[in-house]
Image 1 (cartoon, rainbow, N blue to C red):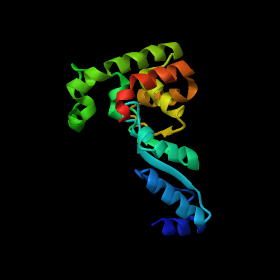
Image 2 (cartoon, rainbow, N blue to C red):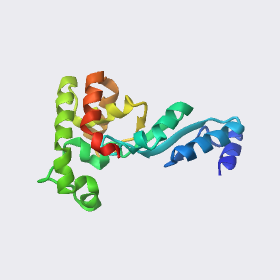
Image 3 (cartoon, rainbow, N blue to C red):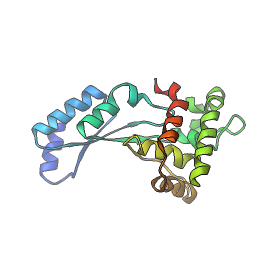
Length: 181
């Protein structure tokens, strides 16, 4: 597959080659295989958020940093759980209602995280989702949040205009430590 992508890259049919959900070993192998063809591995797209921090513990984030591969974070707002919009009395409808992030116990567990995102957001004139996205950006990743309306799109974009200080980044990291594993 990578050999064919390398050919497509050389032929000008693709500008960059990326992978999705590759573990650390696979990322290194893909990087090495493409390097033999003189082509950089541009990205590895995987789930990463304050509530899904496995890329930090399974070696993927370190491998991406070491190799110069951009980690593209999908579900960066944990399907909306980090927006502050949902709580025990206001769970989402549809299939999201059955996702682990929206179970009553999980919503209770993330309540302090939402409180911290809100508090930090006030200091930056930002909403919780903007702060959660900014935390990811400051981890060196590129989050790809969804937006159902203009308000959500503006909140997503606002993450680019704020900067969290080291204490704020650390506070969020500590508050979500339990989601690293």
